[in-house]
Length: 169
Image (cartoon, rainbow, N blue to C red; front, side, top):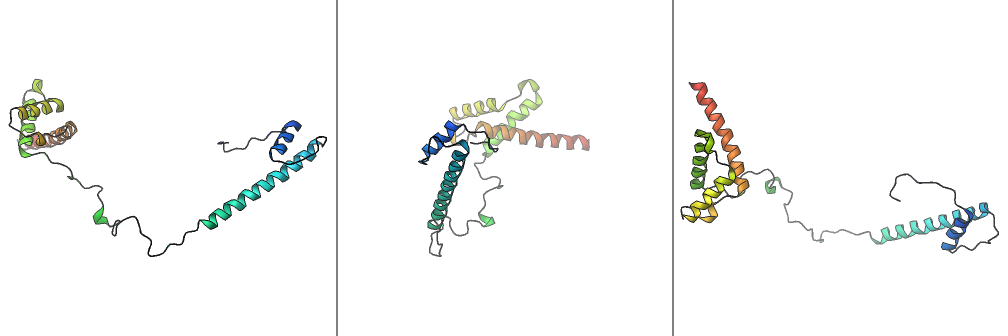
């Protein structure tokens, strides 16, 4: 049924009788196959007509008249560009200056001694230790994903700074 091509095949006489009986079309059992086919075609045409009539009746009954008193589900001005929230950076929670300095220390320590490189997970663990030592508040601790983003942004900035310094020398 879901195929886009119809499959045509020749119905047997028994199948024709079954389809006719299913549609309550009375025929003589001794009728020839061609006569049965014509009766089935007429029955199918009548069914199709009835279905089309039902559909058009339903469409007529479902015509809705819109008026100005109809309550629109969205508030006034919903489509204004100023109300859009897409593409606005910095909408979320920001990293505090104390946490920023600590992350920078961890990053630069790993930059000086490559064997002491900090991953985002290790940086997060160290920040949690600072909370236990009461140097930071729990709310100041960013998520792991935030730290990973910070590392990628900071490393790009740091590389650019180092490249500029090497050009000046």
